[in-house]
Image (cartoon, rainbow over all chains, first blue to last red; front, top):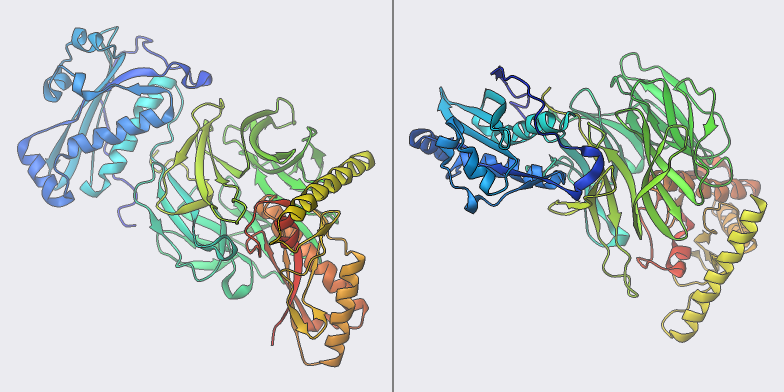
Length: 446
Length: 159
């Protein structure tokens, strides 16, 4: 966990903006942009040094594969087959022969160079507009060699940002619950991995049931529910130090935790005598506040990004529905009125949408609606799926899906999936074991 | 909302009938449901002779049925006779609901059982409540009968 904060020394090489290629991210993957990711070139001495340190034969190609995979998985880009590339990586990085890249129908080209400088990894890369024959961006940075995967993610973020006009989401991590064992006795552990499934690590041993981990948007802290000593309580975990602590001193189950957008409060439910209410606890002065007051189940709270509102689900109308209130608990308004039951509202980091889970006629949906409940759009339908979490740029949702078992109760599995806000580009997110309850981190580097 | 409820119950009865007719053709299952509440004995264990350990609920409900109240009265009588025994009421939900809501629902179900035991003279000091939501199903099936077995509150001896 050391060296977590990447030491970026970014040298911006100024490039004149010509208003070149643009990717329309509101349209999904109907026409992914053909892009050529030329392997990052590397001199022989640097190659040997990195091979010794990182046990990777050619770190330049490894980093470009990460970029290529990220671009492909985003659904907005179509990375072209390297076999068709005519120009050598080192020469392409100096000056691409645009007609060669044009010939293979590449519209954008990424080139670059890796070198070993004073025990560090130095990368420079360039983004080119093939049709216009122009350089769109050039960046260089230096970091410790172990951060090489993050280098690939950061390059992707920069390229994504330049081509779509929106922040990327590739240099991020996912915290989730890793699951194993029979459905009636699931063993669950907290696990964390890079957004692309690499560097998976288990954070708990599986001795007690753990559920619903969520990232602090401003630091490497996580809040989650643990059944330690059979007392289900909300915990706080520092993923860098491994320190854990119970949140507050409640005489009963606390659950459904989430951070406030400034990371200073935890909002959660506390269940007592058959009634669940929403509470907040300030992490600095430990002051606890009761936010809802209703003899129904009030849970799954989530703040708006400006911290002024809270969405939650409640069965005060008879069935689970989504409500929005001011952050002090006043002005409670029901916003979901469609057919079915609605739960797990999560406010988009852009502030304009709420993602939710819906159950209607025996099917589960992940959908989005505007914060006043209008414009409901269902993105995906399945036997069971729930708990969407937004990518930090608000373009992608990650959630989990469970399979229906057969007549003998066999065949159960739980997997992480992601889907674009457009409803396109639904993909399984690779995990070494089964997984559920994913939560997406903020961008690690800014 | 009332109409909704009537329609929903009607729908549940249809589901139950379908499940029952499915049972009729399958010799293995001895389970049965009334409405969508489990009334069989497949998964039931006994705290003492004639004292079943669990009660079952309808979908999304925490209301005790007549049969559940009878079971809880037997538990209360047994607890009055064995005054040193303390218990945990473990509340559960089926897999057809979101995880957090189901944790709250499990807690509400276990508390419904707790309240009833208290009205039959069992002190709240002897009862603790633990909700598992949908985390610990007894039946791993994905069908209405399995779900009905999983919507339950189980009384477990704590000492």
